[in-house]
Every structure is written in structure tokens, then in C-alpha cells.
Image (cartoon, rainbow, N blue to C red):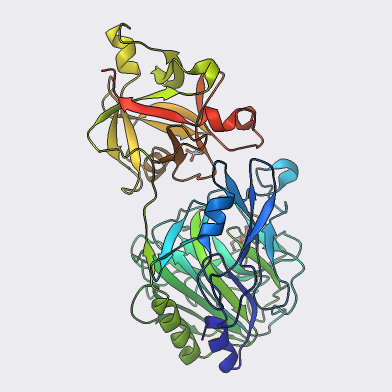
Length: 481
Ligand code: AHR
Ligand code: AHR
């Protein structure tokens, strides 16, 4: 059985079932999600390998070979057509044209399920999906349940990495107009014990960790790589539950009456569905999401415990974030541009600016050093890499507002993540392409001889699709200095 077969047996059927990694009903053979590739803007659907099975990631890999891919639709497996697509602007605008949110990279969150490769949804700040015309999702004070499987190590303090029930207008229509899973370290409303990240319920104008606003110490800091998050709510009753999605059972962090703060009893749920954003399209949060559902009716703890056993049996596990030319921490490299007009230029820095310059074996030592980088384990994720300047020890290539800079490591979470890159086989077919860890739609690119993290088409000049594949493909060699 799949999670939605279990909810159905429990009398609380799924009214939305979303996953890019697997089918959530044992009989489901339809499309899980749609990807769009950069080369020709065509799309294809990714379906399970077999009924009830893991996504056919090989279909995606073949379709996206030699280009980039974005996740355009996350299909609803419940039959209700509650698909998730690129979120529109609301109280806040997204970064794309006309205020839409960004779509997620199709390759930012690789995992395995029972040894088979699949891809999750890597939400960078700016990324969001939504359905403002969903059918069958709880409204008013009606009861519902929901769960999501998340990456417990990918989060921030922005508002709001959510999955669940939100406003149909994409605007903040008041307390009690949402009921969604939140995961992260926002401390603007509620907090749990320790320093987070925490599971909280986003009930609009408030992330709740328990019955009161602010600290509820029964809500623990989450430390597992894969995390099952559960929120459910009905008339003057709600609960927060969670557990390691790769082993063991769920714990109840809160179960009881509605928050004491005013406006949350009765609830005024509207029945739209969000992923990666707040109810008013707040787009500052990050996280990684693999699967989740919404139910009609208040699921029993026993039903949720069976769903957790099903998730554990799916055996979520990590897999490599890199490919192509292997890098070794401690080694020193130089990176040569491959675009035909620039293929004697190397990635260099001039002060804090990252640029490209022509470098040869007879260049001055100072220039050779500017073109040389020490490979370090990724400051923000040790499965990827950071690049320390050879002539300015302690300073690393990082992005800021999508421009590359060489800055001193200030040890902040933001710096470390901005300075983490995951190399892969060159998108052009030559060399390596170096993906930003926290913005995996973006790669290190030279544009007018300046360094950026660029997406394949987008709102910045340096996102131009012209020459994108060549501009993001670099030949890695041992260093000049
Ligand atoms: O409740 C927290 C957030 O507050 C909601 O997600 C958003 O709509 C509002 O800004
Ligand atoms: O470069 C994109 C983002 O811009 C970085 O993550 C952050 O440091 C800055 O706000």
C-alpha cells in the first residue's frame, strides 16, 4: 500500500497527493511531475517505474542531458487535479517576470529510494508552487491532515518554507486563514526548544509550535537528514507530529486545543495549496521537499503511524551531488573558460570582483595566483566544494545578489552556503559546470568577462540563454600557482 491507500483505509482520504520521488498510491502509474528543458523549452512528464513505484529519474536524465531542466508541474495523484504550478504574485512578488516565483531545478535534490535514484524539489529563496483553485481541500473549520517528507538539514529563517492549506488570493486575509506545515528557524512568531530548525504550523500571521505564541519547549530541534512532518487540524483541535523519515516512529510534539491567540478558533481555512512559500507569497525561505499529501478529515495517530512506516520502508537515502572531473579537497585548481571567444581566459579575481583574464605559463606570479583556487570541502555542505583564493587565504568565491565575489569567510550560515558549489559534467559536453549549492538552477558563468551565478534564461542580463552552455562549462586543471 502507499500512503494514500493507508489514509483511505483510515477513513481520511487524500484530497491532494504530491511527490516527485514516488507514487503515493500502490496502483498509481500516472505522471508524477513535469520538467521543462532550457534547450528548446519543451516539456516531458516523469512517471513511476512501475505502479506504486519510484520515479523514473532516467527519463529526466535523458531528456535533460546537455541542458538545464526546471520542475514545471507537480501533479496531484489523488485524481482531483490539484496540481502545483509556478506560484503567482500575491502580497509579495516573486523574482521572475510579472512577479511569479522561480521554478525549482529538476536536479538540485537527488536522493535514492530503495537504491533507485529520484529527485526532490530544492526550494531556494524565490521559489514557490501553488494551486489557488484546488478542489476538496478543507475550508472554514473543517478537519484535515497533512504530511511532508523534507530535508532536515536544508532550511533558513525566512518566511516561509510551507506545504499545506493557504489563501486562494495569495494575500494575507487574516489569522486562521492558513493551516500548513512550516519547517525552518524563523523565530518571528513561534519557536521550539534549542536553536532549530523546528516543525511549526503556519496558521497565518503566526507559526505555532504549540498552544501559545512564542516558545513551546515540547517542539524539538530537528536533526535528521530526512524528516517526516505532520500537521492536522479540526474544530478546536490540532496536532504537530514528526520523526526521522528514514527510521523509527513519529512523536507527538503538540496535540490539543487551538492556540490561545485570537483569530485561530474557529479556523477560516480557504483551501488553496502552497509549497515553499507563505500564504501571502512570502518568498524568503529555503528547504527541500520530497513528498506530501493533504487529507479530508482528521487522521488518527494510528493511521499516521502506518504512513510513517510506509515512508521508512521507502528507504530515503542520500546520493552524490557531484559528477564529472573529481575534485580533491586541499588540491589547487585553475578554471579555463571554454566559450570560443574566451577560451584563453581563466576564472580570476581582481580585488573582491570575480572576473576572467587571459593567463599563460609566462604570466606574472601575481596574475597566476589570482587565477588559482584551493579546493575545500563545501563550507555549507561537505558533499560539495568551496574555492579559497590562493593569494588571499581565508577568502572564498561566494555569490551575493547572484554576482560572484571573493570575500573573507565570516562564518555565517549565509556565507557558507553562498560559497558552496557542486561541480558536474560540463553542460556543453566539455569540462565541468559548477552549480551553486543554494541556487541549483544557477551555475558559475562568465558574462562580459565578469563572474556570476546564472540561470539558463531569466531576469538578469547574465541569465541570457545565448551561449549559456559554453559560458558555464569550464576546464579544470592543476593551478597556475
Ligand atoms: O504566518 C506566517 C506568515 O505570515 C504567512 O505564511 C504569511 O502569509 C504571512 O506573512
Ligand atoms: O546571490 C544570491 C543571494 O543574494 C545570496 O544568497 C545572499 O547572500 C544575497 O542576498
